[in-house]
Image (cartoon, rainbow, N blue to C red; front, top):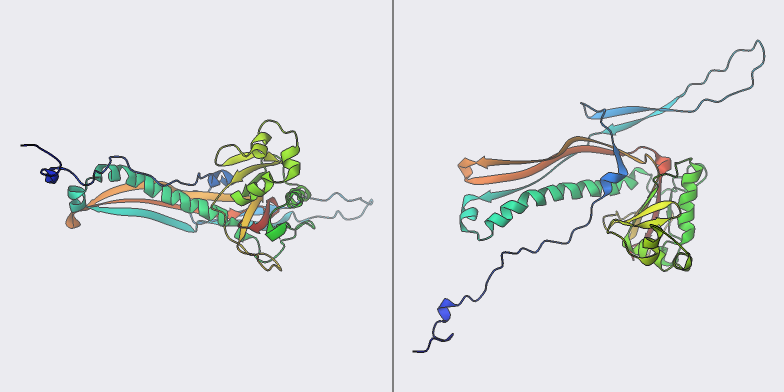
Length: 303
């Protein structure tokens, strides 16, 4: 008797499942690097930081009263407002019957933590809303919120120069300035002749050549440039949008302040009465725009 695939087909598996699991491609997260997280916030959920002004020197006339200034001009308050969680439940029956259970159990903590960190990243990118929406947010005579002036609201070099000038006029440190832009913005910059033709060295070559890591794409006009697909949709002053607008952020020193009351913490516990295991991650934090002068938002078409 000949043994062929036709007479032993019941012994042949129609479909074989691999031990390999395909993970989603994920955004590289770097938003926490944009925030100064303070540590002197041991309890409570509201921290107040006084804002002090500079004192002025005046000419003095003999025998006149001294002019006294009040250096206190306001306060900044940071509240712990976010209490986030991510979790999943696995029943005993699921564990008993599922071929991939060992792989899934291994990945659940990683996925839950990733969900929490993506929420934090999103909240950081939403800090542009601490500006007054639909307003130029003018400080020192310079707009800190405006629309890209290129075709279909694309960014042009003049917009980058305007962002730089707004920070310069506000006496914002030139050290550590960052530009967080949508990939459509960096793509637009790579098509600008002045950038392509210039002789650049070191990190700048990444911007000119279009290479570099996911998060950092180079340095130009005093800004370290980073790409993000998690920037927020936004609106602008006196603007009829041509499609969706994206809030690209140009940041100086101490733009954002935050406090982490509870770092992402993974817990696993057994619910014996329901025959299941619970995996969850929780975190608590607060975020705020600390120095309004250190933030410029350039709104561009989504591309």
